[in-house]
Length: 230
Ligand code: ZN
Image (cartoon, rainbow, N blue to C red; front, top):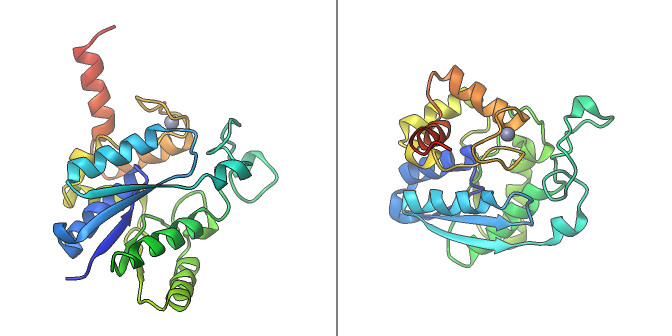
């Protein structure tokens, strides 16, 4: 069986992909990789570690500090998150230009050295943000570039590409990802428990509601506050 590497951000989608990969390639053939790109919310990295631990999957963290140096977006510096409807650009200011291209290129380099032929990423073109590096044509073009540039038959899998958030929740549930889902991080404000009002929290809540499934992350904090009153 060939080996697979999941790009794990600590979020809901990459966690679902981790469980998809386990089912698809077999537990012993899957490993995971997280990029420390100077993200403002360090809780993402903690979440990724915890998810890998629950799934009992090997996990590595690669540092890339260039995005932090470049700045200019709400995920690496202190500016507030702004929706594309609130500014004069096509994209929300959570867009980190080139992020997925760089992540997957480094993931491919990491995979090459370990004879891993399959990369899995949780990108979706149905994502409300419309990030251009999450689209199917970008990813298939990048796959082609990596194959040419590394002379290595790498395949990029995007199991969530055309799924709605609700479909992704249903899929995660079927794959048995909910224990790990309780430790994922989504909130753009980096809040724990999640703030519940940022775009990322609202999109997550909508997905769980439409899939008629309780969010184990929300339940975990509700349980905690119930049992540990202030
Ligand atoms: Zn939030």
